[in-house]
Amino acid sequence: MSQSYDRGLIEDFGRWQEFSAGMWAWIFHKFTGWVLIGYLFTHVAVLSTATVDGATYTQTLQGLESLLLVRFLEVGLLAVAAFHILNGVRLLFVDLGVGIESQDKAFYAALIATAAITVASIPTFLVGAF
Amino acid sequence: MAEHYSSFEPKGTRWLLQRITAAFLVVVLAYHFLLLHFVNHAADITFAGTQVRMSQVGYFSTMVLFLVTAAFHGVNGVYNALVNQGLDGTQKTVVKWSLVAAGTLLVVQGARVASAMTGLF
Image (cartoon, rainbow over all chains, first blue to last red; front, side, top):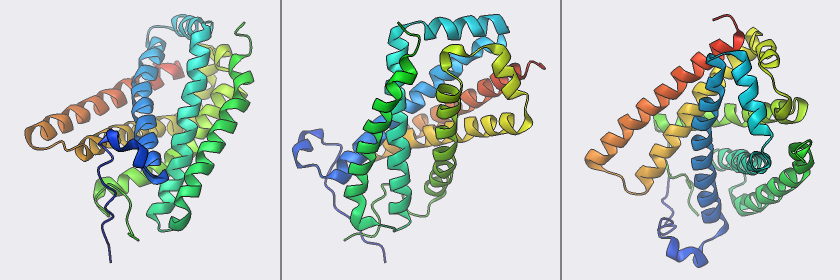
């Protein structure tokens, strides 16, 4: 039988000091989700240069990659995607009723793994940028 | 302790589709990042290389399916987030159809891009 869980109003961000791990996970998942869908529209817009011709596509992508800011934004995008993926797996398990009692630990594990993946990827993303 | 922590209506169609697309995206988004940043560096990408990848039927189909599922998961996620914020009535209807239009536009343009990347069109 389903019960409702009164988590209070997460949308009231003034309560942030009272937030539990699960509520932070909810907020981070929404935030990273907004970033990813925003990026998807931008990504398709940039790749649309392929409909002009091959040279325009190559020049546009290589021109963007020559900007150090873009390289750092890519690291940020990886961090956002990694967290959304890892916390998404956590959510799938929670929805399946698996490991609910460890959902807070799973959130901390997702944060640590995201940080490790992001830091480890920095050299790859910055290669040739300087 | 509650059995359901999801903010979606349990067992609703949108709830189910959000999870099915999530399970697919978890794998394909990770693959996409690995292939285009770690196996092939983004800075080295050229149209010729893209064309080679997109000319393979399996890769092309996966990328188009990736586009469709990501667009759905994204706009459906935005819609549900806004409903959670208390969106209701006429605003809800306007936002819903705006998101349907935006998602459709994204898929159509993405499909055009994918076709152009094969170099066949």
